[in-house]
Structures are given as structure tokens and as C-alpha cells.
Image (cartoon, rainbow, N blue to C red; front, side):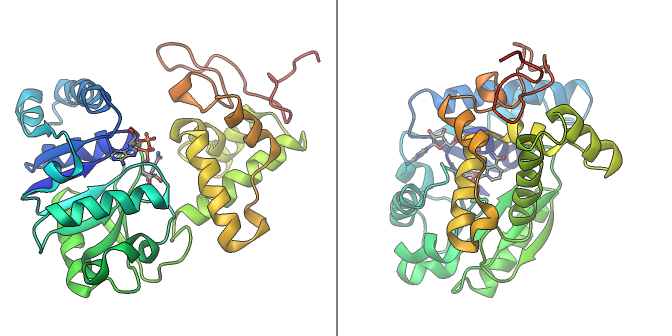
Length: 303
Ligand SMILES: NC(=O)c1ccc[n+]([C@@H]2O[C@H](COP(=O)([O-])OP(=O)(O)OC[C@H]3O[C@@H](n4cnc5c(N)ncnc54)[C@H](O)[C@@H]3O)[C@@H](O)[C@H]2O)c1
């Protein structure tokens, strides 16, 4: 199949890799100059790690990379696409612009999918008129190459055939699916993970425990694969703040972001991608401290 991936950030690069590894031909577009080329570098290094572990199904990294082409615009990426996957920043206005251009250019029967973590599929589709029936949430998890689940989210006017097509496409990528039948904020997964991570931030702010002990407690005591605070750094604290603000608007103040989280984002401490978030990271991505305290200062700092 021909797949257009719009947005080549954290998720777009991984989704392009998953699609190309499964044999699809991908056209990747990002509005930020150089971003798609950067994504291809990340995809190459990930594919080389998979190949070294003999986990590319006998393919060479170059074979997979040869199926990903950078497109100069959303329109050109979507021409002749069977599937369009939008994975741009989590802003309704930007997603509206992208789908406006995508629906103009894509074939009239293309599957339209958004990777939003918690925005309303129905609102994203409100600019699509009758074509909104072809729009479905296809929520991949980070990193898409490793995570098993794709959460499908059904908008108010999403057709049954669209959901079936998305299920078949995800399953062809080797993914499991769950269906969030009601287009409600945060779906099945983001709503829960937001509240758990928020409670960890509140405990940090109250001085109940250090960041590293809160994460360790959830990893070793509650069997979380990763602590919620380190996961926040991994996914990007800015993304998490936007998600909380949106959940607060729709579901109420129990989702209100903490002051520390706002301060970290305002200071550009966004997590791994900037080398510093709740924790500080070395150039190779390893963690080099025990995290901030409830005021955003290094834990144990003499202030
Ligand atoms: N990061 C995660 O853990 C995660 C997990 C699941 C879903 N998501 C969702 O995936 C989407 C992307 O998140 P991300 O973490 O990859 O963000 P990101 O900031 O890493 O990447 C977003 C990309 O979109 C590009 N972009 C912005 N406007 C554009 C436009 N008009 N046309 C084309 N490209 C444009 C930006 O240049 C950027 O490269 C969001 O909706 C987010 O909620 C994120």
C-alpha cells in the first residue's frame, strides 16, 4: 500500500519505519525544513539496530529505507495514498490545516487517520464534510517500532468500514488493536496515563518522595515497565502539558497541570529531547541525576 505520513517528529519517524518495514511505500512530509531528513537518519540507525539483532525479517536496512521518500508538501505526500496518517503537533488548528490539504489531494477512498493522543476525532474531522466518515483515530504509542498496541478511536461519523479498514491495516503492521467506541477526551489510554503521571508529579511537589524513588516504586512495586516521570521525559514534557491542559478543559480540574511541570516546560526543559527535563541526560541518553525536587531544582539542592 501507499502510505502518507504527515509529521516527521518523534512519532512520525517511527510510524514511517513501521509502515516501510511491513512493505508499504511511505511518503513522509514535515513542515519544518530538514526535519524529514533528520527522521531518516533516526530511522536508519534504528533499522541497523534491528538488523544487528536479526529482527528485520531478512531485509536490509537499505531495502526498508528505499521505501521511504520525503515529500515537499502534504498534498504531494497524499497524492495516490491509500492511507494518510497525520502525526503533527497536538493542535487542532494545525491538524485542520493538514487534513484540509490531505483530503484535497488524496484519492476519494483513502483511509484518513490521526495519531492524536487525546484530541476529539469528531472535532478534527469537522473540516472534512462528508469525508469525515473516512477519518479514524489510529493512536500509536512511543516508540511505535516497539509498542504492540494501536488504539483505534471512533468519531461520531466514522463509518464501520473505516474502522474495519484501520483494524486490518494495523494488524498488517503486526499490531494489536483496541477500539475506543466513544470519542471521549483521552480515549482509553491517555486519560489513565495522564492521571497516574499527574499524581506522581503531585507527590513530587508535596515532597512525598524523590523523582527516582517515585519511578522506582511504580516500576518495581506496581510492575510499570517505566516510571511515569521518566516516561514523561521520554515522550516530551511539552506534549504532556498540552495533553493535561486539554483534558482539564474537557474533564475538569482533576487534570490541572502542576506548577513544576509548567515551570519545566517554560524553561525549555522538555525531557530527553532537550537533554534535561525531570532528569538530566548525558549525550548518549543515559540519566545522570536523581531528578528534580518539587520546586524543579535538582533533588537535594542547597537553596
Ligand atoms: N510523543 C508521544 O509519546 C506520542 C504518543 C502517541 C501519540 N502522539 C501524538 O502524535 C502527534 C505527534 O507527536 P510527536 O511527539 O511526534 O510530536 P513532535 O513535536 O515530535 O513532532 C511533530 C512534528 O509535526 C511537524 N509539523 C507541525 N506542523 C506541521 C504541518 N502543518 N505539516 C507537517 N508537519 C508539521 C513539526 O515540524 C514536528 O516535526 C501528536 O498528535 C501527539 O499527541 C505522541
